[in-house]
Every structure is written in structure tokens, then in C-alpha cells.
Length: 226
Image (cartoon, rainbow, N blue to C red; front, side, top):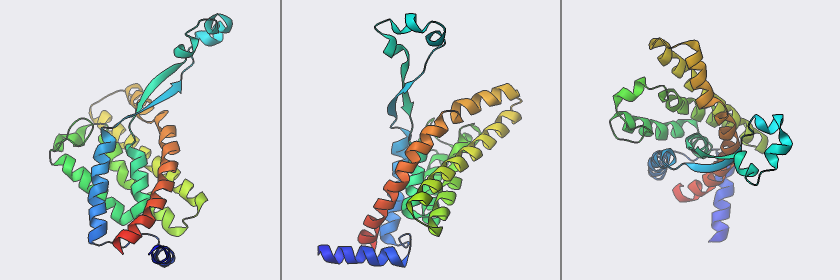
């Protein structure tokens, strides 16, 4: 049994890059859409370093306090949506992965509260919706790059460019919505820094991990669906 599974993995691994669409993959697509909902409402707490100005102006005095470590760290609630998008792309590919994201987006626009702030057609006019639309670009870029060459270096490149594509679409959409609302350039830059400032670095880091995870899960799909 074990040898048959190994033989099957090697055969499917050499015959194509992503599993072909069928009933089994369709179930995985539905699960991936549900996984996006889980990622939306399951923040990961990260401890990050933020050094205040007084740490540089009076270093000895600042670090002489017993709670100096607490003063330079804070907890960030990281939402792992974008890494999950990258994982879906590396597992299912561009075309099938887009179906999973489309299912997630349509469900939200239909009124189901699967987005961070609820759901409904009005969500189209929220500044954060651009990043949701960017999921399609991330899936496409990551999936297409992996189709060319799924080696380790290319997996990393696919994850990085996929994350960047999501943020580019998000920033463009954000800027368009705020310009329609007659917001100032400074307000737009403030929102860009808030939503894509340090966030993009965390997305790249976790996106690379997610890309390699997706490639491993891809073999399990072949065994389960072929």
C-alpha cells in the first residue's frame, strides 16, 4: 500500500504540476474558501519590537528600568489571510485557486458576514475591499510562477511577488475610494502605511512559509483525488 502511494505521487508529480479539477478537488476548493473565513477571524499574536525615541536620547536611563523590555515590545494581532491565499495558490494553482477565492468573495458580497467587518454589497465601497480583490492577483501571480518552475527559489519568488501583487491592488483600490470621498493625499498615505506598511513584511515572511506548505499539501491532494 505504501509503495503504491509513493509510486502514485511520483507519477502525478512528473505528469503535471497541480491536481486536475474533479469532485475531490471541488471539495478542497470549498474547504479553502472556508479556510479564508477562518483566517479572517483567527488573528495570530506576534510580539514585535518598537523602540521609542527616549531609548536613543537617554539609553542608560531607559534600560535601567526593570520593565524596559516590556516598553520596547508590543503585541500585534496579525490576520493571516494573505499567507492562506498564497498557500491556496501553491496547492491548487492559478485557475482552481481563483475559484476558491471567488467563492469566498461572492459569499461575502451576498451578505454573509465572512469579511472582517461583515458582508454585503456595500463592502465594495470600503477601502479594505481592494485587498480582497487583490487576492485574485495574488493567486494568479503565485500560481503562474509555480507552473513555470516549482523549485525552491521559484517558490520563494512566487510567494513574494504574489504578496506584492495583493498589496498593489489593495493600495490602488484604497486610493481610488478615498479620492472619490475627497480625502487628502496625507489621509491616503496614512491608510497605506497602516494597511501596507510593516504588514507587507509579515505577509512576505508568512507567505513564503505558506507557499512551501501548499506544495507539500499538493501531494496529499494527488493521492486523495486521483
